Length: 483
Ligand code: AMP
Ligand code: ZN
Image (cartoon, rainbow, N blue to C red; front, side, top):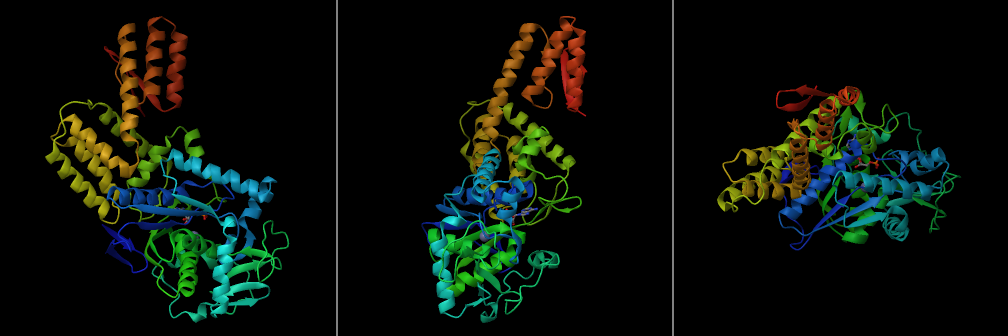
């Protein structure tokens, strides 16, 4: 399996440090608000990576933090604590906000079929770990105290910029927007390991430490939590591209200075989901959440399908039209799978193996999910019996996570009911683009028409029209299409 490594800027063969386990760490959400679908693109692609590693037979241990303290408005340690901001906005305590948005995050993940990592650790529960690391960094001269805070001294490193081939715009994420200069820092890239109350009088969460009552910086959280659960080395560390600098750069600086050796082999960064007017954000324009997609009638799995159609190392443009197309394609795919008959013929092993090899090659080439999706269509077209096709689709979907067999089986059942009911009522509903709810409404309208209840028939036609559905009456019955 080959994976692009941001640290070396090359596609490299993935070989884990230990034969019996792949240690994977993911930067988790800052739980001061709902995740937007951009954040979720990152988690979704990381989920595909984890699923593919397991598919390839690796035993994966994946750890994710929940940032519930220390992440300031600017990634470069200035501005207000995001959690405090969320608590003020909603007039609740920081812990209430953290609990609420952590649950909301995992609800979204469930809807997108993103597996929960093996270990999920809130940053506030590992204070002892950070104190241990910071104490050693101070003892060994990698950190200094100034103005009540403890800073990492980046001048002590031979090489600080690890990911510096990123766009100037990405590199500037942490240091832009007229951020005020922290005069305690010896140099601009130095970053806070421990804040004391001298900086934020109204900091809600604080802990005792050898350097005074205070709270940890955001970067130290991921190093501390990773080392607590995964030990002194790591195979893959993931995050969105904006995490590369300064967050991941600082994680490497402090972890390797603390350990005295290399820490993590592979760095996987997911490029951003952008809106037509720029990077997606929680403060700008329409705040795109999974719930909003659902309110607008989208299936969250259609968003998963949308993300899988593009490569994680390319930025992805979000428009409603693009999502419409993805939802249409996803529904059509389900309809085609629903049309396969389970239990028809035994599995043709030669076809199975050949198709599977193609899928493994696609995903094994730096997680080429769009080719992985193409492999689904290749299976549908393959000269094979339905049983073999269903087995392959189910197999690929353990990685793609589109719930293909489950959704197709539900559709098959619903279609059968509609057909039975249609033939019982004498109407024939020609299933349109594969949506049981719409099929049912089309049938209701046909039945109303037959009973000469034209007002009801018109009402249903209007209701469907509002959803962008046009009914087409034919001699055989009724059909429908999206317009
Ligand atoms: P946060 O909750 O702000 O800590 O971000 C959670 C994750 O989402 C991080 O891995 C970010 O790098 C990632 N992220 C932020 N914005 C986007 C975006 N527009 N597209 C994809 N990933 C993003
Ligand atoms: Zn992190």
